[in-house]
Image 1 (cartoon, rainbow, N blue to C red):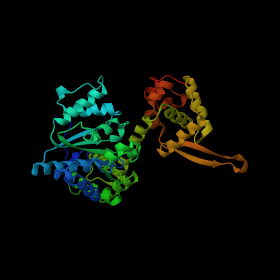
Image 2: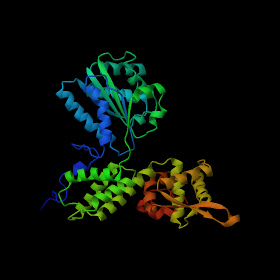
Image 3: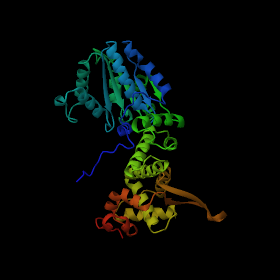
Image 4: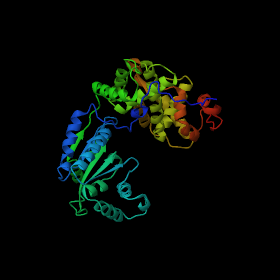
Length: 413
């Protein structure tokens, strides 16, 4: 009996090159930013004290890819010219405080068996350990802090950007590269931290249509066999990526998902139909993620509108949605937010493309009001809100949309 899974290289040569983590041998579509970045890194190869660099721009605009590419090139150049260079990279996702960031950097510098616990140390001790570890190095040391905006207080950034001036390090030339998705992050910093961290600022704007096409063409040439893509596939992926704010990651992921669909269907080529269906799947997943990340009362507001949709009672006026939302709160003895606050939630949902709102006019004496309806199907919303439904109870209108006919959920009414 033949194995169930068989190798299939009909479309793909190297599918892994369509992953976010892949760094190509050459970066396309970011010539101006690379030139500016190279100039900021040049002092390192001159064996001069490095500038601190702050990189900012939205998700998927090439900040991390360009940084990794240039740091690889920098390391090779340093080896060639016998420059003593250490590069320490730390992703700050999940590090909300300076204390956590400092401990993570200490542990990044230490061998696994010497790492310290994440809690229980006086702050002064943590920074003393950090300076000790940095002073064990020599030459130029570059610390790269990706997603730096996750750190919500200035202590760590103040300490590390002022370490030389304050006499904490004496054996190295320390430079910092901060990467942020939030362009306003630097404005929230203490003036001293801002002036130190942002010696050189480089902004990465969203990719334009032509730039996205270049990125996709480069990846496609590596990832797919010649002739595997129909003519309109890359332009459509680029156009949809541009609609998503010029996000290259999104466009590359879309191309990979379209390729996967075509491979699953044993198609000879990837077509624009595969791209359109892949886009629908990505949008559905994105909506699920957005809904699951809503706050408790935002989810309750969306739940209220969903029950009305299941009763075929939408578009529904704001006051009708609010009454259902109050019912859900009162059933569990929770205090509802004000009607005005709930209307704010509904406005936010429209921005997130979860709902659609219409302004209605009832003549000179009838006034103006808004009506709301879901822009996602009921089953998808119910699936995303299962935790809230489990906590608050399953409204009778959505029982049929629950798994196992709602048997695992308490019934609300």
